[in-house]
Structure formats: C-alpha cells, structure tokens
Amino acid sequence: DSWMDQRRFLVSTLRDFGMGKNLMEDKVRNSAQQLVEYIDKQDLSNVDLRWPVQVFVANIINEFLFG
Image (cartoon, rainbow, N blue to C red; front, top):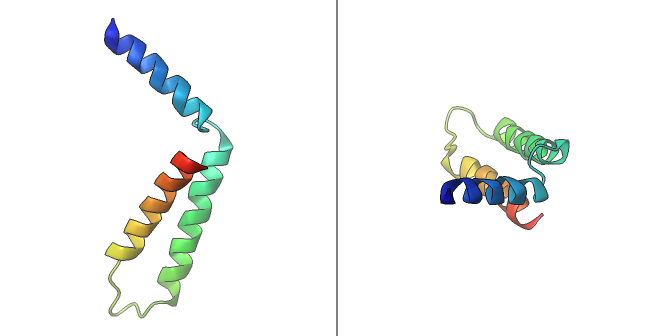
C-alpha cells in the first residue's frame, strides 16, 4: 500500500532527525526551561503568554528541522 510506504519513509526520516532519542527530549526540556525562566521574570498580574509560547513552539520546530 502507498500509505504504508509513506509511513515507513516518515518514520525513517524522523529517526534520522532524532525521534526516539534523548537528544530531542533534552532540546525540548531546555526550551521549556527558558520559557519558564522568561515567565518567572514577568509581572504575573499582566502577562500575555501568546508570544512566548509561539516562540517556544517555533524553537522546537526549528531545532527539529535544522538541528
């Protein structure tokens, strides 16, 4: 089946990028720590989390795609 070939290709490609390895988990954890540190420095009575969360997600995607 075509979808099975595509699935195999995707899983193989994702493994090449680090899926299933602790390296990717460490990158996510480091980015999450930076997000928490940023939030801790903000005035909690008036903090907009949309931008920091967008940056957090973008950093994860960029690390995943570009290493």
